[in-house]
Length: 310
Image (tube, rainbow, N blue to C red; front, side, top):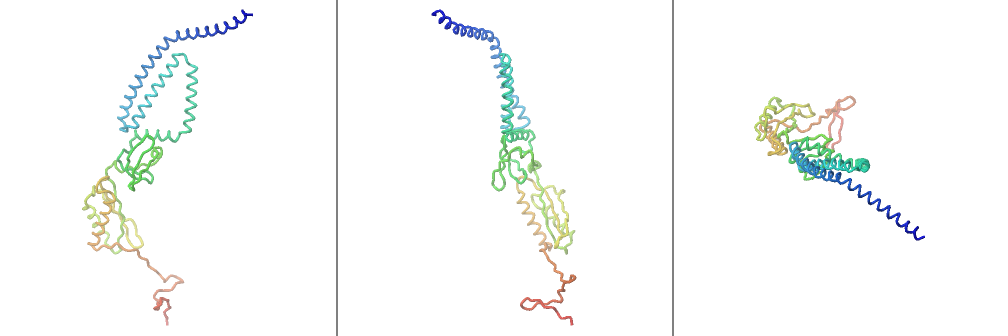
């Protein structure tokens, strides 16, 4: 009886000892692989650091955006370390763990991709904008119905200070998908002014007066590109457009220069006795079925009476 109890106790102990011995043997056999793995870890840490520095230098040759540069270098650093991690798992013989890890990362990436697809799209659009560089900080741009000065280009949004004193945060995805108007690249902007003159005016004289006024206006550039054209016959005037260029952005600004041009044209018209007419309405009572105005008279109370034709 005592011998049976002793046998029952020794059997589990022997099993544990055998398991520990097998683990010890496996550990001894893994020492070369662990040494190789440690060496690989050091190598990939150095490669990741070098790759990060090299990538940020290459990035700054294409774009000076520091935020995107740091993001790009971090991605390169993580990618090199990730590659090294997978290789080290293979050296250690953890192939099954490696397969399970890759599958788990794939599923997690798919879930996160659906959950944060808009944010991811903004980040990717921001990276594309950093390389394409359609504008930079300080430029005056227009996107849809928003116009202002670019104050900051972030990883996810672009911040614009409007001329109305508002700070607008626009997602980079929306910017990439919209038409971008950059008013700072060409360093100039055209001003279009529409004016109407009386039908009684000499149109050649009007054209000469307007062109001379605009050409002599301080702040107007590219005189050979000034365009004058008559556009249409309005109800009480003949309308024309005057189009000229100014330096932009800078002084005088767009609205200041437009204001100066309008006042200068009005002053020149006054000196040359050129009329900008008021709207006129002509009433015709002689249509079929109506009554001629000559056949009507008004009494002192404003009541119309028909003239006698006798």
